[in-house]
Image 1: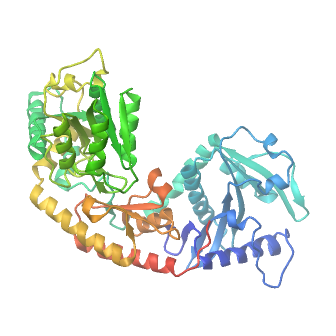
Image 2: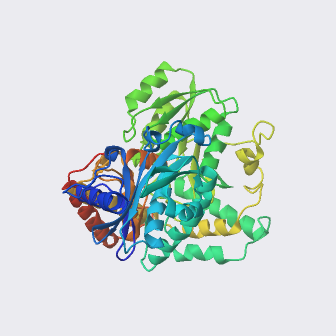
Image 3: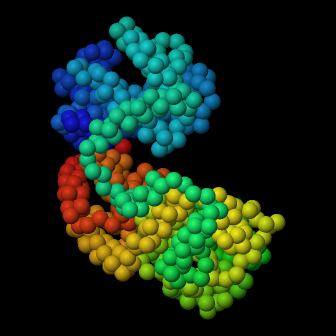
Length: 547
C-alpha cells in the first residue's frame, strides 16, 4: 500500500471497494463517456469484472481513482479489432489496461502517477513484455508521454472514440524511469518515520560498525591490513569452532559456488537436500558444475526426517558427500545440523552446509562439517558484500581445474588475500565480531522469537515452520487468501516497518516474513502487532471476491 497523508494506493480486495468501483465505473463510462446505457442503480459492473485486477486510489475510504488490468484473452480490444495481434510487435506475455478513471477534482498528476506506480510493480512481478490500452483521443498526448505507441484504426462511436495503443518492454523501461521519480517522492514523504528493519538482509547496522565505511581505504597488501585480516578470520573460526575460513568479496552465492567447485574435483556421487528456495538453489549450483548427485526434496516448511535420509544413504552406497541448507531462509525452517553430522559421520560422508542465515543467530559448531558457507550481512550484523567458506582440512590450489576466483585452495595459499579486498568491509566485519556477544545474542533471539510467534498466532496468523524446527531469527507467515502479501507489505512499509515480501518465491505463495536478525526489543513490535491485528480483522470480516 502506498500512502500519503490522505491518499492510499493499493490493489482492491474488499467488497466495499468493489462496490465503489462499480459506481465510479458508471459515473465515468455512462454519464461522462456515453459507452453504456443508463440504469436506475447508477452502477456498472464491467463484463470482465471477475478477471480484472483493480489498482485503486482511496481518500478516507472513498474511491477517487482506479485502473484495471487483465491478462486473459479475449481482451476487450479483441472484440473491437479483428486480428488484433497482427497490429502488435512480438511479445511473450501481454496484458490489457482498462477502465482508467479519476474523479473530477482529483485529476492531478499525483493520483495518476500513484496508480501507474502500482501498475509498474504488477508488470515487473508477472513479467509482462507488452501492454495494450484504448486511449481517449483527448488523452493521446498523455499516453504518448508515458511511452505508449498508437496502432490500428480509431474505434468507438461519437462521444466515445478511442485510439488503440501499446507499450513494449523498451518503452516500458523509460516509463518506469519516470514513475520511479514518483516512487522516490513517496519515500521522501515518509522519511520522517524511523524505519524498523525486519528484513533478513541487509540488516540494521550499529553505529560503531557503520563508522568503518567512513575510513580511508587501505591497501590489501599492507602489513597492518594483513594482520587485521588474519584476526578477523580467527574471530570467525572461534565463533563457529572451525579450523579454517576464507573470506571472499561477494555474496553467499559465491561461497556456495566455491563449495560446488571443490566438490567437482573427483568427489564422486553426492546427495543434495531441499525443503525450500535455497535448497533448490543448491541443486542449481550442483547442476551448473556438472556434479554427480541425487536429490531429496520435501515440501517447503517441513523438516527432514533422519530415517528418510538414512534409508536413502543405505540405498545409495556410493554417496560420498551431502549438501544441505542449515537455516532455510524462505520458510524459517532450521534443519538439524547435529543429526546430519551424525549420519554423515556414521556413513563416511562429507557434509557441506549453507549456513548463510544461521551464523550469528544460533550456536553453531562446524567442527564436523567439511565445507560451510556464510556471509557478513545477516546474523553477524555487518555490511553485505563479504562471504566465507569454512573448512576443517587441508586444501591445495587447483588452478587448472576450477576458476581462480572460486579456488579456495588459492585463497589458503595466499594468506587468504589472493585478490583485491575491501578494507572497509573487512574492518566493519571485524568490529561487528568484536562487539558480538553470543550468549546474550542467542538467548535474546530465542526469547523474542517465542514471544512474537505466540502473539502472531493469537492474532490469527499461520506461521509456516513449527516451533520444534524453526529458526529463532526468521518467521515466515502464510497469509490467508483474502490478504494480499503485496498490499500488506506496502502498508507496513509506509507505517515504518520493513518486512520481506518482494522476493518472487514469497509473492508466488502469498507469504510475508519477519526477520529478527537486527536485534530489536519488544517495544518495537507492539505497534506492528496492532497494525497486523487491525489488518487481519478488517479483511476477515469482509466478503472477498477472488481476483
